[in-house]
Image (cartoon, rainbow, N blue to C red; front, side):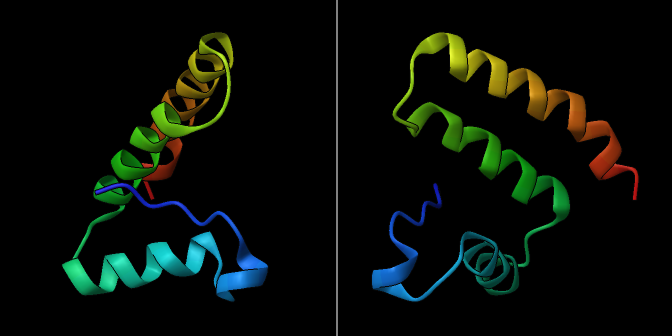
Length: 68
């Protein structure tokens, strides 16, 4: 599963709203949602260096996010 919202104006939705729908529909935990968002880094239109920076940011934030 990989969630992306490319054009909020056309689809009248937000990425956070889509994650909320997924969480409720599939009984996803915070960890599940975090892992799904982490996986989307592979799909962005950017170079490998930027993707690696984003992966590190996600890893740095994961402990803070999941301890609440």
